[in-house]
Length: 185
Image (cartoon, rainbow, N blue to C red):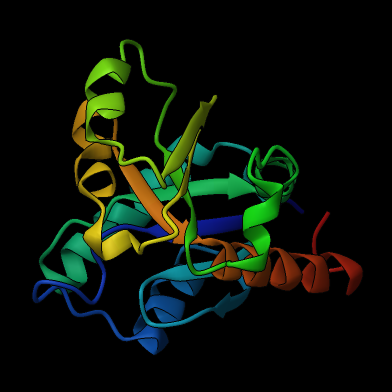
């Protein structure tokens, strides 16, 4: 059974409250199995029999809307995709400053990203690279101060949800645990 990593955008911010126990309940009601969540900002690892991620993502979004009254974009990654995103990290030196290294997971590959505008917003200490559906950003002065981080999604033109390196590592560990238990593949 495939293992998925679900990255929810907009959960438990700006009044869009969804306790993780309820998120687990929602996912289980949609036939997700072995559901585990990580921190309150909306991360889950689970197995599910479908290979149709688009349909599953739509069903999850609709169920959250029905139960909680708000829409939360969910980006579903396979175990292999999140491992590949880690392996492709162009800023290997930054893993030693993991709260400053962010991976922006994109809903799709940007068709016409405005890289010139992104370059203009980047300060000298920041580094970024767009690789397929992942926007890597190393912001050693902090993501909260980064004008680039605040504008990236708009300039790429696709929905994005961002996770720091620590979170990505933890999600991979959770997926590895599920895989090694024989409850997913």
